[in-house]
Length: 385
Figure 1 (cartoon, one colour):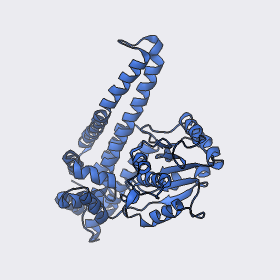
Figure 2 (figure 1 turned 45 degrees about the horizontal axis):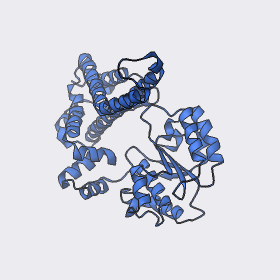
Figure 3 (figure 1 turned 45 degrees about the vertical axis):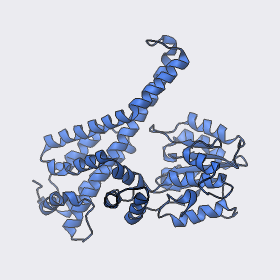
Figure 4 (figure 1 turned 90 degrees about the horizontal axis):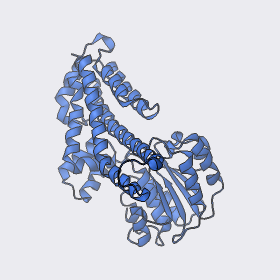
């Protein structure tokens, strides 16, 4: 694939549908789309590529001003909503609805891309519904979510589904090599990322990310009792918080300086500016929490791949390991426990993910509960020592 579609690896069927819509096929085009797919499959990239192709006079050449400004987030007629908070509220949605009612300034369409449509609150969904039911003539909504079921039914029923599939490891490795990554590193990153393109790129480019991944994979072998589990949980949560802090520190400082300048603050916290400063602090705190949860989600993904390898060994499935660098530890665990115990641990990881994402459980509590479950003896009376 070429032009704006070049990075959508393994999505040939979807690209064919989107290209037909761009070409003006009345049966393919509609005013509201819902891009779905597993994490890392490229939902937001697909939506942005589609937006660029719709604005491009050549249907997505990837070289013109419309394509380049869309992909960089600078096109005046494309609004990109990427939240770092836990939800998108009604106030934010109403702002989007007002924007959607304006005519495009330079482009062919007014396009609203919502990367986290699954985080829109119920009241926000109510505000969004009318705009999607009765859109402005040249407005297009592009919503993104992991699954269609994650979006309020009244919204998803009015959108055309644009499902993405998980790209193969071979396709991801080819993409990384195209980006200049060493073939061996590209193959490694593609294998362990399990179809997550963004994760593969991070692992390929950052030795620190590769080292953090290996530290997570060594956790199961260290869980010899309750104390080990609680200590490991605290360390994981603290590292995730530190990572989030490091990623946001510079942005937080710049935002505070900009607000202080706008309010004329030279020192201290004058009472007249308290409300604005408090609102900024709340927004920054929400962003740090979101990034901390993203870091913890990566931990859960690595643990899932580890216990998947254990289960493969226990059932003699013959599938190649995702994590050969810890195969010895996985083999020891496999020989000391039953497959039912490993399945219970995989269920515990899923429960932890749901606790963090769906129920907003405190990270330390969620991770303590998980690592205690991973450390206990389980089914068939087989002890894990």
